[in-house]
Image (cartoon, rainbow over all chains, first blue to last red; front, side, top):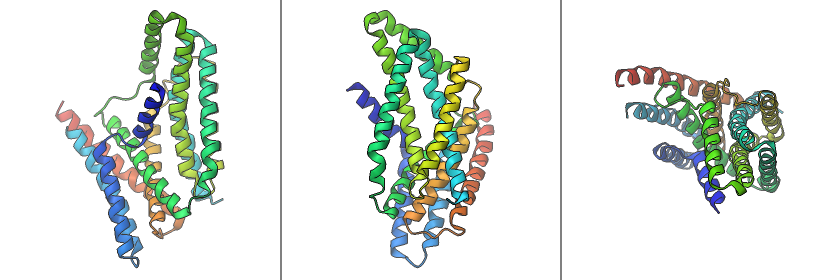
Length: 68
Length: 247
């Protein structure tokens, strides 16, 4: 049982370390996805939102962690 | 097989597997040094068998998932996984958090096993084997995920598996020769590089899943990786003086 709990924790830990980073990434994907549905003629804009959003959130998160 | 996609997939699988295999080997060697090779090797083999079972059970299911849905789910998981690695690697490179030290990990695991030896002498072989099993399963799960993530959706699971297998064989061969943790592996540099590549794959697959026609198709992965590298290097450069200014 103990090993199952450890394995589950490790599995979640594979994807989530800093909770705010994980949540922000999911929000960016969601917003890009909604944009691609609402504006199907501009799929590249959704791609740009996704890419720039991820780069920005990574940079901001690291800077915040460094300040803390 | 498209070389521009295959090369990053195989390289990513190789480098990330190298890191995970080194971490697993450190624990297996600690077990071997305390209780001998029998429980260490048996635990490691049991761990490998479980991983094989997971791959055999889950592998065929991937072919049943629609391609766009598969790309979207794997892309999002890769984004979470890759950016988590990259964030940590940037913070380590910038000196904000301590570097992972295999020598310390080896010493800690050895000490824990000796503690257990004092408390549960009769069950120790079982506990030692379990430690070895756990290390192989937990680190191996990361390898399995990366291989599936960078390989699925483009028919590259076989190629990525070969990259991962090559890395594991290299690490095991070194482990048997030197019988010590591979402390000279530039682990953070590898994690930095793999974090950049996994994040790039993550953005690419998520975009494909959302129906984004990336300019240059597969070549876009290289361009996205270059942007992540640029931002990551800038972040390292900016965190270093900040840490120094506020000790």
